[in-house]
Image (cartoon, rainbow, N blue to C red; front, side, top):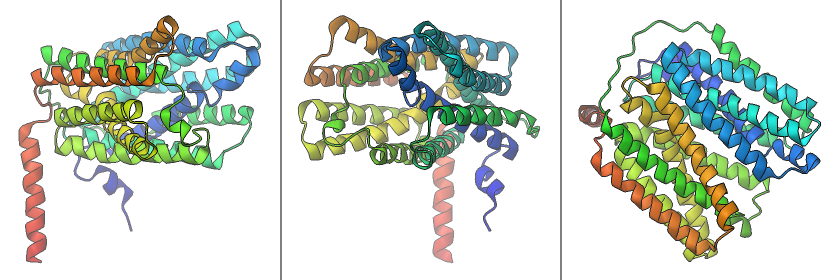
Length: 400
């Protein structure tokens, strides 16, 4: 029989109770954010009140940016990342229920601000909580498992609950948030997690600058290229295709989490930037169906890897004293990229695909440059020890 506790904690120093708390919190906040803020449920209100989805989107992003930075500062001040995450979840559950009271476009705008606040607080707290309970050499695998679990849960939600009413969806999402916040009552075991701060100082700015260039590239691509190129070949509204993409993200996250712990952060970041740049160029310059599907595969893989590193891992690796603020600023930069793209559309309008693909690819290539001035956060001796342990296991198998 499989020992779940051993499976989740074997080879690490993570407490079983803490990892259960992390996964429950992660699934709750990510599912709520994915389904509620990205149009699964919001679109119903947009249609009802005649307000543009772009207006809602921009207002939500701005509030999320400020909430992320503020909650990061609060985490640094209080040291309570887990509590901050739970507060964000409870807030999300409450405002979900308040959505039933929306009767005008002004109320919808105010509600979108509350959604941004809840999301910013919850997601910032969750990511700092992960960094707090993990060591540098295991952080990627834990984050990969968390994202894998979350994506699979969203897949099950979309498949099993397809066609349910908006009211029922909101009630279920609220219930998820309240259940997720219940992990406060799961008493964490007391251990001392060894903190291995390898890189800090100027290197933080290099990694952050690289991240900002990436978010700018993706933000412009996401805003300018509408609809997605693949939608011309396959109905993006088809649940089966959307589910397939989510499953791709799930496995890419799981594999990426292991790779960043085994190979290192910088190498995976650089390769992922190149892969994503290639995907954008194929979309824009060689729009052949077979190559477009190949580009989609590259996009999914690179996104899975970059999500692990930049959303969850790297900032916990390189932070010295202001972990919460750094995670908050990184999340703000991510959504700031979306805001940048939307503002460009408002100013310049939609541009030809080939221009956008070249511009976004160029930014991704430029994003590699700051990495040349950084050190690898994952200690070299850790990589060597893992390689040696793997070699020893192979030798033992040969003797048997």
